[in-house]
Length: 80
Image (cartoon, rainbow, N blue to C red; front, side):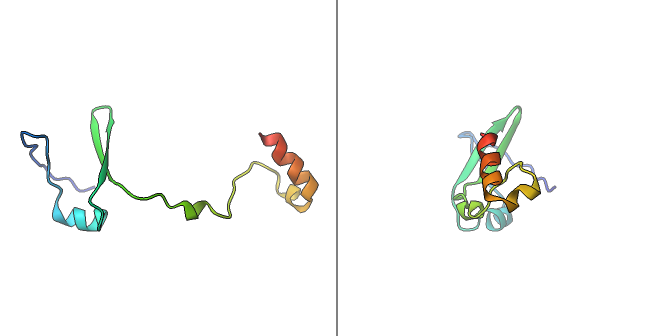
């Protein structure tokens, strides 16, 4: 973990170190800010990567059930 100390100006602004902006933000100029208790969290705003969800599904079904379409269908319908 790398830490730097910055002053907050009278309008509540802080400046992010240039190296951090280049490495973490890249071309993005927007960040998301969260308050978690007494901590302030700043994260880069990014478009969600929906492709990583394509062709995948997580289910709690026994492995041998996948060999029989009807058993798999019934098991998945019971999961709801």
